Length: 304
Image (cartoon, rainbow, N blue to C red; front, side, top):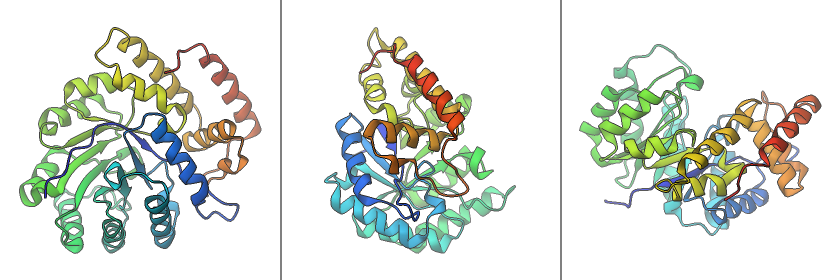
């Protein structure tokens, strides 16, 4: 089953929370509509930025249902994070996403055990694909070794493509390793969706064969990043790329998810956005002061 390839700026969406730590679907729907209205081409739900691995399976299922049924966004523009340490849990979440019409699945490798072999990773992904047993599945490998301790390499990807063909539909490379991303683009960019994990090198990545980026910073500066992508072939591209990198550096200087939620609370005037799940904590008063001082310095940069 052929589906259109996804490209452009995909927001790695934050998960708003209630005081009891459960996801707040009302705030999420407002935020998703804002992201799409600000120029994002798609939404990656329940990934790292969405604190997915701090939520229960049933919370993740109910939350995805709420987004799909309430946001008014075509399911073709949604990527659902379904990767867990347990293959059985990944199968459950993947089947659930597919039942909602979401076929693009962003899947972490099983991440508890380290120094595992490609044979073991191939078996884990294979059991997931065969357990889901749905030809509609479009699996996006998620390479974020600084979090998982596991790097997904080209040899593994080739082996998965050889056996599962079009089911292996893409990869998000959040390694921050430009030579690695460039190599993935060269090897696989014509065949599947290769997404950079940030907008920091977006122009170079697209030139190398990437189809865009899946980025957490879109939660704050969606229009700026969308404008960078739209004008990547113009004389403004270098300036826009520099500005996007400076804006991203602001959040990387602080606990990133907490800083993004702080910014969103300020933008919306809704303090509930500051809620994060343990072991994460909101920005301290000192961090908030430093964050807003640095943010004020960015006001000179051009908005989209």
